[in-house]
Image (tube, helix red, strand yellow):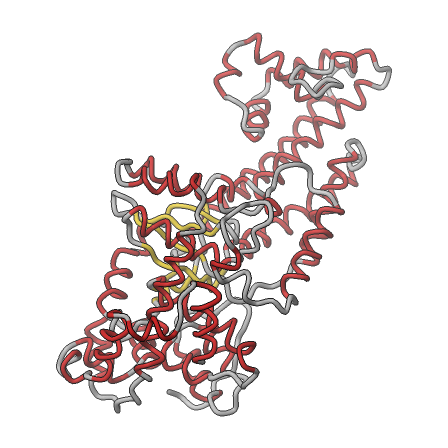
Length: 529
C-alpha cells in the first residue's frame, strides 16, 4: 500500500512520502490515532465510533438513527485500531490530489469559481450548468444525429478504456494535466477531483457521490420501452423509411442499448448552493440536477464532518424517494402522448382533402404544433404571432431548404409526391420528438440525479479510490483488502473483498445489512452479523 501512495504523491501530485511525513498535517493525523484515548474519549460519540471501527459503525449509522446506532455500538467489542501511518498518508494524499487537480482547471472554470460567492442560488445553478458542460468530454457530446458508426466508435472507446493497462493517467492530476475537453484522459475520478478543487476555490461545501443506482439505468429502461414501440409502429404504419437519418438513428439507438456496458465503481460530486440546497454534478456520467430536499444532504454533510477524524472513510447512503423515477415517468407519459397524437392526426388527415395546403392548414390549427415546436426548443412566443405560426408549420412539415436555413422548403410543394412524403414526414416527426424527450433532454436540462448513492467527504474518498486503482499495479503484490475494509465504507470495497477467502464472510455480512445494494450485484448471505 505504501508503494501505491508513493506513486500517487510523486507521479500524481509532485510531492513525496518524505515531504508528507514531515508535514504538520501528517503529524496531526498520526498523533490523533496514536493517542486515541485523549483525542477520542471513550464516552464521546466519536470515541465510540473510533473503537467500533469503520465496517460496523458504518452499518449502524446507515440503518439506525444516530442515537440508536451509538447505543448499540457501545455494547460491541472494540475493533483493531487502524494503521496510523497509512491512514495519515491517505488523508494527506486526498488534500494533495485536490490541490494538484486545482492546477488543472482552465481559466474558464476558475473564473466560474470566482463568481460563485457573489451569485444568488439560481445564478449558482447556472454556474453548475456551465461547469457540467465545460467538464464533459467532446466524445460525450450529444449534438448531431445518432448513427451506427458513432455508436460503434463509442463502444470501441469504452472497450479500450476498460482494458487499458494504464490505470494512472486518468486519475492522477499531473498525468491527465490541464483540462481540455478534446483529448484530456481524466475519468470520473479525475473530473471529481477537479470539481472538488472548484468547490474549494468557490468556498462551498462538497460531497463525493458514488451511485448505487445510476440515473442512466433508469432512463435506459424507459428508452428501451419507447424505442421498441416506435420501431414497431413506424414499420407497421410504413413510416420507417421516410427519413433515412431518422431510420438510422432508430437502428443506432437500438444497437446502443444492446451493447451498453454495465457500470461498476463510479463517482461524481454534489455542491451546496447559497440557499442550502445541493446540486449533483457528474459530467462523466452525463448527470446533473438540483437534489430534492428529501435527501437532506446538509444533515448528511454534518454527520460525515462530525465523524471525519474517527471514521474518515465513512459514507452515508441516501435515496431520493422515487423523485427521479417520477420525473422520468412524467417525461415518458408526455412522449407516449406525442405518439398518440400522431395516430389522431393521421385519422384527421384521412377525413380531409389529400393535398399539402390542407395538411399545413390542419397542422397549423392544431395544438400539436405547440408541443412539437417546444420539443425542438423553439420559442413558444413565436407561435402567438399568426404569421410566424404559419412559417413554423411550413418549416416542421416541409423541412428546411436545401441550404439548411430555417426557411421552409417551399420547393417541395411542387414535388408530385410532395403530399405523401410530407404526410409521412410529419407523422414520423412525432416519434422523433417523443424519443428525444427521454434520450438527451433530461440530462441536458439538469432534471435528473442518481437516485440512490453513497455520499462521502471528498478528499479521503478520492484518495482511496486512486489507491484502489494503483494498488495492484504498484508492486505486483496481492491487494491489501484489509486496509480498504477497515478504512473505506463503500459497497464496492466489500464487493471486491468477496473474492478474498480471508474477508468474504465479513464483507458479505456488511453488504447484507445495508438498506440498498449496488444495481450490478447481489449476493447470498451467510451467518448473520
